[in-house]
Length: 335
Image 1 (cartoon, rainbow, N blue to C red):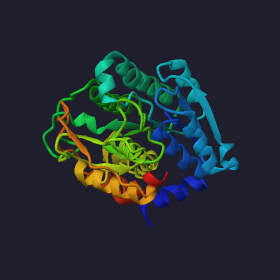
Image 2: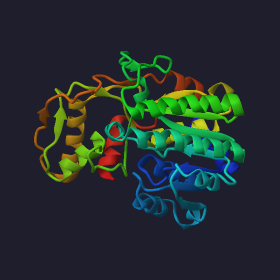
Image 3: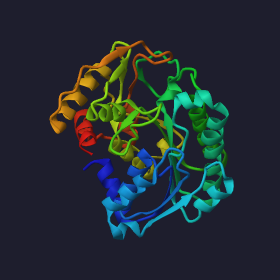
Image 4: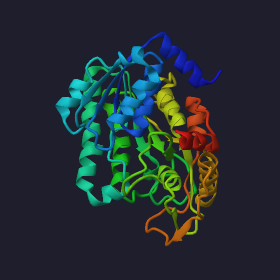
């Protein structure tokens, strides 16, 4: 049996109350879906900064009427300390995903990025320790590696942050460690790499590449690659990210507390291969031919290669991805 299977079995036996910040968002809605399916009571706090009510509605349809009785929603901003305190009442475990999650947007609005990602996170940590929360799990980012030159990113080797977003996520890790040392608030952080899956927004100037390409191919629109397509990334299906978050929220490994872990497949895929794979899946499902990709100039600031070293999360949390890139893409295209 896998560690995740055991963790889910324990949760079913002893249901708890969870707060999911950003629960109307892409990743957050999948966390909410899994928790409700496991019989947990779930409270969402979200201000629809990047989330959508349609994501919550989709979760409700999937889990069914009985599970929905255990779901509540607070429309509020994590920058509101009083709202964070209200949301935390009676909560056992927190999954904190609410954020300004765009590097380009953070470059345009660094002060707002800091208010949401740093001040908002600190409000939640203060509320959590005051409420006696058992575990505070939060999203960091692979962006914290900055100008680190290792193509495969190891948790112990950080470069200098290259954006306000990266800086804000690094500060989150510092505050998490501080709140554990100073107040005993147990926390586990996760440095997400390139997460993808159903309900990921394909629109907007800062949309991630996979939902953007799928939408463009399905609608007969041109698809672009910045550069020669040789840039590599570690693409991880959202259900495996949910696994990591729930393992972190429930692990009994005391050595995991206060740490931040990479979350990815530990496998690099270049953009040319990604395009070919998505193209084949879209052609298979639509019966239409997808035109060749159009290459443009390299985008300033793009990292050439990025892949997660998953040794730590595998050995310390028992993380074992259930989805290959192909299977994750197949499910995403079909959604």
